[in-house]
Length: 469
Image 1 (cartoon, helix red, strand yellow):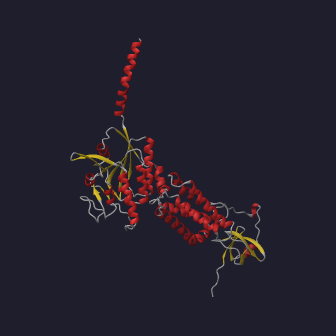
Image 2: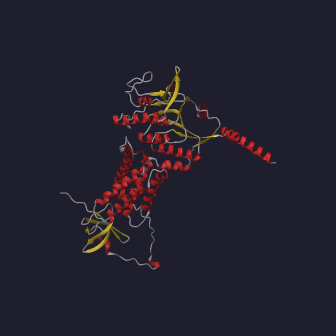
Image 3: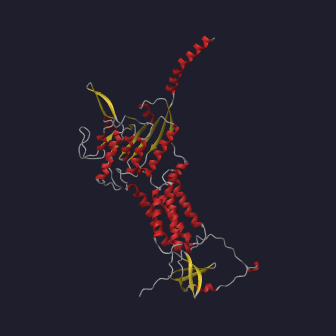
């Protein structure tokens, strides 16, 4: 019996490695795929980062990115490049048509490149929005990025003419030639031209593993035969977030915030304008926070700016340091929340170009909001569109008696403010002090105003225009 047990244990110990090896061979490889068929911008950064993170959680064996782009923002491309290079999972790119400019940088960062017939890769010279070539400082940065990205894939050993030698997996000089027209490589590109490869040219020069027509062929050419594909499909939530992150929608939300705050100040009490401003702020910051762009400190900076601005209006008369600081903090909070903080670098220097677009969007939206308030503010207030309080008619038959007030006779009278009207304050009429509300804008202490109307026990006034001789 003891001898039988020993033989059984020996049999099991011999079979276990064989079984493990068989299971490992038969195990399906997990492949995570997603599309990047768009301009390279902040949204593209979020798409790539989100998919790589999801693939890592899924413990995928491979990631395949289907790419088709004519380029985009340099900072966004650098962020995607860095995310791919730092990814522990092999990333394969299938260029399904074009990988121009920023798309070339992203493709070179991937572990393997496969291209559709008729595709192209290259033309990575840095240009502005109008297509004008930027100064050499930008080209130098792009050259170094292209070169270092190619070098990141290391060298490979080849045997040529009976001799063993090491060559770059992707020639850094070729990567530079995609940026700099002054670089000449014998048999590949002449000086004076920016390098762009067709599919076959890329294969011959080590910038494409093979030609493929679809994802299935990519997997076949990569010798991945037993696999299970997980394909990323944007959800309804993703669609809503992407909609709210559209620059036009963000501009509208900024208009809503500032317009709501202004009209709330013009109408006493907490009402619809304030709700609209808060709603606009939530819709502006929520998707940015969810996507990891808006940080806690950026939201705090925005809120602090609003508090300082309100303090300037209600507590500290005049436009001083509190109001100016508040406006600056609001602009900083709105701008910085749109930027991925990890891309603030430019050859170890602060990259100011990253903030130009979001800053321009915020400042332009604020200017449009200010112009709209000045032009439409009084008309909207006069139309009573914002007056949503409940009204009831009080009849004498129900026991209510109306009381006449002499304040009605003050309409048209000129008087002086004894406190700032922000928008509510005090005026003095015939040595009597009354509460009054500015019709539009804010009125300083000591200004001459004219009473325009009297409604629901409240005087309304506006600054009296000076008559020029």
